[in-house]
Length: 546
Image (cartoon, rainbow, N blue to C red; front, side):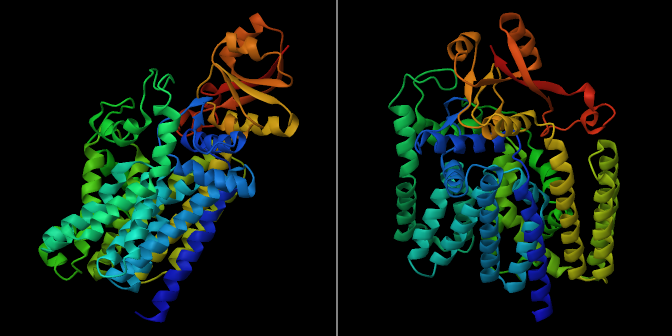
């Protein structure tokens, strides 16, 4: 590999990091991001790191680590959207670094750099930098665990300790199912290469013991919050065991759809989800996977490649067979997708390069048309500037990256990703967040009534208000609760339009301000069109009950 290649890919990585950092300076989105941020805020307010509270009650769904990380950054930088998003961004960088290291050690430096470029420019990685949930953390922790266990096959025992630590961190974010992408690849690799002795090596059994040692803070937290208090009402029933939920209901219960949280499975869900989530690389990924079915295309690759394919395949199949499916789950195997795509890209000959450059041109044209139409019909501020920036970036990509070369596909794809991120982070998402009434109301309240005692009346999904409003937010589930709290000094209640009408018949109410609302994570044509938007908007209010 020559210096020019190395420099190009490093520059592209630097550009991607610079542009993706723009996501740090916008708001937190509902539902999950705002819910998790509000729960981390409660850790700071209550000074309680072992009990999780969401919506004003004990909360049992995901483990603690996501909230501990966010709360630690709140402690350092204050409670803000920036402090909530920063660790997610930094862990994303750590994930890209581990991806580079793994691909470099198995293959070569060029594959490592291209894999990192693909990973950082995949659409759903970019959007997850803005809409922060738990998946970036899981992706990084599982990848770091895979890397250290890979090194532990022939190197220091400390790689076993590091691998187990990161595997435990992944469990503390999502649950024990994350061990599947970590260990499935190794087991299948050892079986295919007849390294049966690896299965009985003491170090791997020690690794499992260490994982359980490292997750003891989570087990202690769940036991003290739930198992010691069977009288607590969770999932509309008492006697809920936090430990049972952690080891069974939250994972196997969702897979078999017999736990307290249910879903509807579609075996093709992640096939079409990957098509958009892994843009602009998804067509190349599908071609790379098909290419691997031919034995002649596999024999020249390092034997450890089996570990990469097996980890991705087993995880993808389990996700597809599960009855509980969400688009962001697929992020956990994006590193494996990136390596598979990077290897295929480097093997493309002139005919294949021409075909994919043509596909790339079609994607560019579609993106320009769709986003320009969206900008015009949505009518956000400076939409003409957004289109000009987008078009300028794309024209620069076609001017700078020329010829039928691998670098041309990579460079143009990265600039497509950069254009999408600027469009979304600087223009579209901030405009859409104006219709997230909870964050708007919470911000307004903090600026105008910083001493207010905020509350929510008969509404369960006020996550962003919970995060943005000053101090602890009380959840009032009925009018008996309101009667109990109405004498509280500086009480300000967040209510829906329907609830406000009822409230006015029972109390003397002073409306402080009104806010427009739409569920912006579920966009519809009527909302996106400025001429029909008012038809689908709801209204929420901040009121004082006198």
